[in-house]
Length: 126
Picture (cartoon, rainbow, N blue to C red):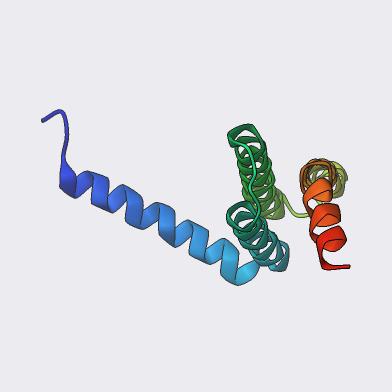
């Protein structure tokens, strides 16, 4: 059979189980989900263009996906243990740095997009 609803349901269940595990165990992922929700709320509050919404959505997805990859790499290299190879710590640090770069980039994009709306909102309330 080309398409099996049962298999699709199982695939989604496994995927959601993985997301729930990362959300339960990784503080940074929970923080990023909170920020993603706040930014998404801001997209509905302010009259953003479709391109601004698309760029913010892409930024959110990039940060969350990289954080998930970071969690995967951490678990994989934890199997190796630092005593096996000194690169284990380097790999973890580099992955964390990767997420940091994406997060700072997403913050800059968010500020560039939301700043004019915040200024307009503050100017209107003064």
